Image (cartoon, rainbow, N blue to C red; front, side, top):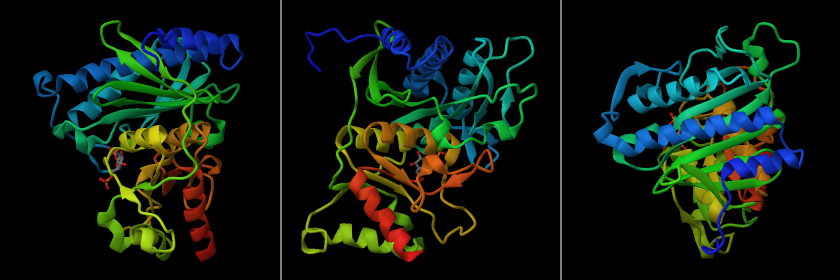
Length: 338
Ligand code: AHM
Ligand code: MG
C-alpha cells in the first residue's frame, strides 16, 4: 500500500458497497456491529495476562472441548453487541450448545449470524495469533419461531463472511460476494482501514499447512499427496514444498490469502465417525467463501464445501482450501480413490 495515500475506513467502504447495490443498509450495519465487537475482543486478547483473561474457564462446550476464559468472553461480546441492533433474528456459535434467538425486548431482523468467537484457542495462553470467524445468512421469510433448521443452509447461501485475526496487528478480512478485502485496525483512530482491496490467492503454490502429527491416521489419498510434496524436487512434483502450521485456522488462512498455499485438515482413522475436525457452519463455510472470492478453491476432498447441505448445527467437515491448482489436485486424488 502507498503510505502517501490515505486508506478508507470500513464504514466508508461499506457505504460504497451499499451504493453499488452489493449490500443493503441492514447488512451494512450488521457488519459494522460485528467489526465493533471484534475491536473489543482484540482489546481483551491484547491485554493478555494483565486483563486476567488467560487460562481455562473451567467449562466445556457442546463438543466436549475445554473452554478458555477468552472463548467465553468473546462469545459474550459478540452476543451482547448484536442482540439489540434489530438486524438479526438469531445467532449460533461454536461455543453454545444451541442457537440463540434475539430476546423479545428487541426488534428482530432478517439475518442469522454464525460464528467461532475465538478460533485457535490453544494459542491463547502462548501469545500466538487467534481470530474470530463469522458467517451471515438470511433468515428464511415468514419465520415466526426460529428453529435449528433455519441455520442449516449451504455455504453458497452466505451473504457475507469474514474473520478477524488478532496477530501483531489486528486485521479484518471480509467478503460480501464481491471480492475479498482486508482492513487493518488503527488503534489510535479506533477504525479498521482498508489496506488490501481484492486479495488474490495464486493458483500455484509451494507451501502447505497441515498437522503432520496425524499422518499415520490418514487415508491413502492423503498419504499419497503429502508423500509427493515431501519428496520435493527429486519426486513427481519436481519442486520443493515448505510447510507452515500456526494451529489457528485464521492464521493459516491469512497467510494463504497473502502469499498462497494449501490448508488441509483431513478426515482420519483416529475417529472414523468424525468427518474432520473443523466445523462446517462456523469455520469451513465462511473461510471457503472468503477463499473462493479471492480466486482460491475449497473442498472436503470430494465436494465443494459451499455446496454441502448441513444436517447439524455443529457438523464437522474435512477441509482442503487455498491455491486452486493444488486443491484441485488433492481433490482429484480423493475422487480417484473413491
Ligand atoms: P478451535 O475452534 O477449538 O480453536 O479448533 C480449531 C483449530 C483451528 O483453528 C486449527 O486449524 C486447528 O484447530 C488446529 O488443530 P490441531 O490442534 O490439530 O493443530
Ligand atoms: Mg475454531
